[in-house]
Length: 397
Image (cartoon, rainbow, N blue to C red):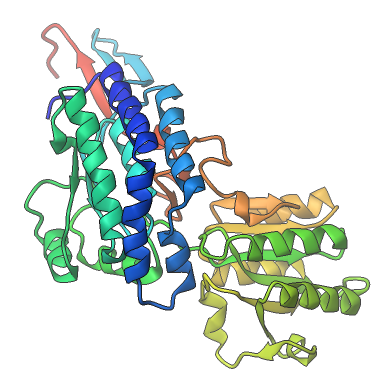
C-alpha cells in the first residue's frame, strides 16, 4: 500500500481518539461479555483482560500522545558523499506489515496498533479468544476512523483465528509479514518463535530481581520491594525475586519486616535453605524456580554472600527485563548496573517503572528482552527499520 503522510496518520489517530471516547460505554459492555465468559483461574490474565474507565482513558491518552509525537519515518540517520560524487543517505523506514499476537489485553488493540500505524506499518492483530468481543469492537472503531478519513481499512486487520489457524498462518502466511511481536506469557512467546518464518521481537518475560546491598537504606528497600511486587502482579515489570546480602546489618530484623509486609499484601513467600527457616516462608525444592516468572502473588527470597554472586545469579536466571540494586554506595551500584545483563537496570527504584509511558515514550508496542533490534520499552521511534537512498549521475564501479 502507498505510504501515508504524517497529516493523514494524525487525522486517523485523532478520529480514533474521539471514537474511543464517544464509544466508551459500548467498549465496556463488550468487555463485560468477555469478563463474564472468562472461566480461567489466572488472575494476571483476568487483570489484563479487564477494561475500566481508567483503561479507556489510557487508550485515549496514548492516541493523543502519538498525535503529538514526531513522525518516525524519513528521519536521516547518516549521510555520506562518495569521492565519485554519489550522495548516500540512510533514513528510517517502515517495516511493512507488523503482526501483533497478544493475550487478554484489549488496550493493546489501541496502543500497540496506534504505534505501528503511525510508524507507517500495516497492522495485523491476533488477540486471544478471551478478549474477542472487546477487540472486535475496538477494531470496528479503527475501521471507522480510517473510513472517515478516506483511507483503506486494510491498514488494520483483525485475525479471528484459533490456535491451529494461527500456527498455519505463522508457518505459511497468506500475506507478507515483516515482523511479529508476541505479547504475553512464555508459552505464547515460545509458540510464536517455533512457528514464525519472519523476525520475532520477544516481549514481555519478566522474572525481575531486586538486590538489597549491605549499604542499603532498609526503609527504602521495604518500600521499593512492596511496590515492585504488589502494586500490579499482572505486569511483566513486577518483581519475582529478592536477594539479601548475608552481611547486611540487622539482616534478621529486616528480613522479618520484609516477610511481614509481603504477608500483609497476601504474597506467598518461598525461600532458599536459610530463608525457609523464617516463619511464614516455605522452602522450595526445585532450583528451576529461579527461572520462573510468577505473574502472581508469589515471590522468592534468597541470601547471597557477595555482589559477584548476585550478578552471576541474575545473569543466569533472570529474564533480561529489569534488575535493581538498593544501595547508598554509587560505586557498587555502577558496578552492578554495568554488569547485570538486563534491558533496564536501576539503583534505588521500583522495577514497575520499566514501561514506555514512564520512560517518556508515550505508549509502547512492547518491552523487548531481545538485543536486536531494540531493547527495553519500544515506543514510536523504535518501530522502524532503515533504508539507503543513493543519488548519482551515471557512476559505475
